[in-house]
Image (cartoon, one colour):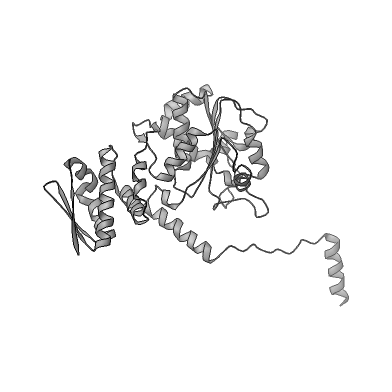
Length: 344
């Protein structure tokens, strides 16, 4: 057992790091099996040598973020703990990212992980960015935030959001209403992100003016999209032909973000995902970035990260097997087989 001491210059940073009712402090103690006390601008850490060292690096990293004005919550603490345990504490300073966009309610949107920061930087520095990763990594939300920021800065004249109209493993059947009503369920995640950034009234105003367009991917054929910020969501459900069609819509002054999760492909088994093909075809091309987010970048409820890790482990142990189906025989072949059985 050893004891280490961290001297703190400003107590407000300690209050921010420890959290409400010291909940962040309790989390560090539980994860690393140490005891932490603060007295007279000093933080005392007691425990096994290795665990104390990890706790010291974690607290120093959190204090650095607090000094830069970052809000500290349980999610930050868990993420920094993971970085420290992986020996990547030198990357903690990258977490203090710039604000991408301010929502309609005044909330600043920032990347919360290193993977998200690299993703946002790729969007800013490239014409085409592919964001590939599991659910909850902020692929679509951050892309919409970047689109709204570019629109507000008058870097683009309109925002175009699109996705393929493919059901997630189930059949919805016929939907009532006009064409817009029929495609709305497929585009709902994009509406939600836009409502959050702009507010419903502002969104409706820009929609009526034609500054915002939300449409299924089939509507993109035959168009040239100039001065636009275009987001293709759920791209894992595009065919190879659809992806090629979409990529060739890019006009002058436009920026494109393509998001998808290659572990959630809802296409028939005999169809190849256009996103998978694009990742191979576009690799190494100048002004095109391919960003891969992982379970460590999940910013939803912490159980989402555990669920993703559990599924990844299960799929490694039980790789999916393709169903073998008997070829469908023609009517003539069936009649010949029936005749043989009768003669027998």
